[in-house]
Image 1 (spheres, helix red, strand yellow):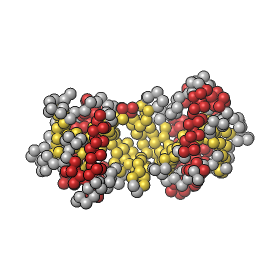
Image 2 (image 1 turned 90 degrees about the vertical axis):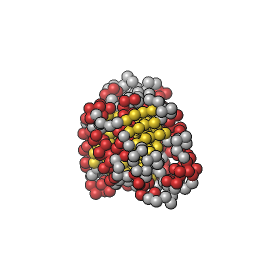
Image 3 (image 1 turned 135 degrees about the horizontal axis):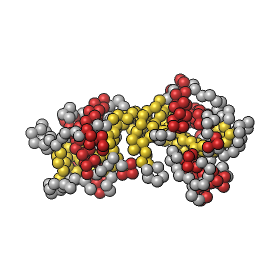
Image 4 (image 1 turned 120 degrees about the horizontal axis):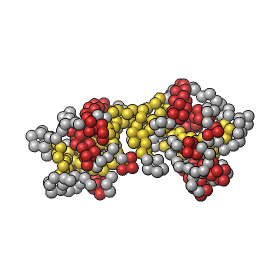
Length: 211
Length: 212
């Protein structure tokens, strides 16, 4: 059995459907349309993320293939985020989310990118509930970390809210912690939630189902 | 890229290479049955050496990291007038991440040399190298969350450099017994200049001529 067999292909929450991301899902042309340099609001939605908008369809396909390779190697689970029926834009490609896996350090790392029409709905927190359940319930990791760049107030608000709800903590601001795609050096604000904190807080606001 | 010799008031630092460190002498201090070895290595990222081959490899990595410009590690020897003058007291150096414009301190000392303030003296000398000569923006250092001795030493010298304690990173690294939390500190070049920690430090090349 491979580690990747532990990763559910589909995760359902009250309002979201998360599907394994790879070369076949989302449709590569849809993916490129929404992640290309000319996509609406792309500068705003990628301002604080670790990747740059795709210059070519080939770059988009490469992103999807890399995610599939990480999945197969058990190094990370990346999902397509789609609103469920009843939500505005139900079924649409709303963004991507992932749980990076570091088995040696017994920890997972959360990440998310959402298209702008889907901001402000609390999807990030709902997806975090699902990814924490995946990390702790299914994968029995000890810790889940998440970070944002200084100045990213939207992420700071969303992360602070769900980290507190799940009993975790803000670790602090760490200087020169990473470089982005164009080589710029950034500080990070880091947070983490342990499995024990998560169990004691019991803070999920959504049902979570793995398929 | 790096000076061969660094001298402070009480310490002389020389390259961690076979040319400057006798492998069998060092092995004797790193072997599994050396007094206090478990106490010394409790929080270090290496285990006591089972064989001199391990010690030789350690010195060779000191050569290659220097050649690849990945950092500079030094053997720490007390200068004349100090107890144990000329002995191998331990090692201290910089691991450089050019991408993030920063260098990380690392050091360990043999137990007879604990409690003398050598760690801080070595750190300020290496910060001088990192900021004044390598023009890096930041120095960082971490200790395991439950290592109180390192915490005390680091708090003190980071404060002298005008830096700060950033926070605790949980499951920061993994040793043989599982993940370990670490506390991270940093000081920027401008904080260091403003704090201006007063300390005598001199750099020399292999021929004992002034460096650079």
